[in-house]
Image (cartoon, rainbow, N blue to C red; front, side, top):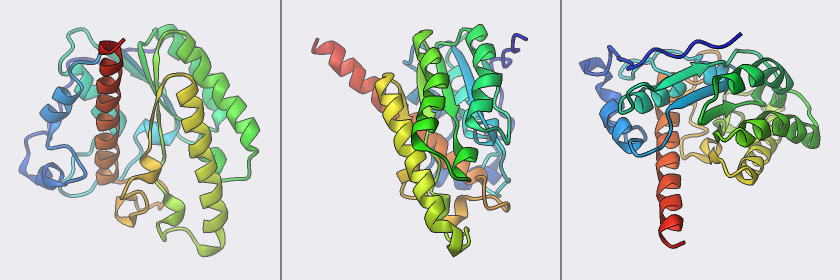
Length: 249
């Protein structure tokens, strides 16, 4: 089934409310939707597909002072704000393993014909034992066709839950090792595909328990705001770098 585009332009009804002032003054967040849109204005993208599990699906807890918008929604908002006719689809579904994401979301994503894709995949695999080589092969079978279609691939590193103090000590060491491996594999593969890996796993606040929801797994609204700032900044810096390489031949 062909996915339905996200309606554009998008309007965020919370954007100017005083009860989100904490976000706009947070040094780890962007100072509002207009700043985000301006940061991403020059990018040549008009069709966005979002793939993954609960992380990109936008599962979160609200938090006073912060807009209840997931980082994927914020990225969509920022691109849509300056692009007439912009279209996006979010295919992400909670609870899926990496091979399930590939099997259920890859074909609809390719049918949508995006020029940029945002992917978070493998987090549910990393909650259990996995073979890094198998994980890399499964991830490659998801990301490579997207890159070969001409879409720019953006992968999102996960915050460092294992070192947040929210995981029981008897599980934290093994969990940290697995999530570190997931981040290394994802970053390396993304680079080989000339994509952008957003290194949220090593963000200064990655292990801050204040970024997490009550379920001690997902992010709260501040976590999503912080992640989006990291995403927008990384994407803008990559654009600057590529422009510089083009200018110097």
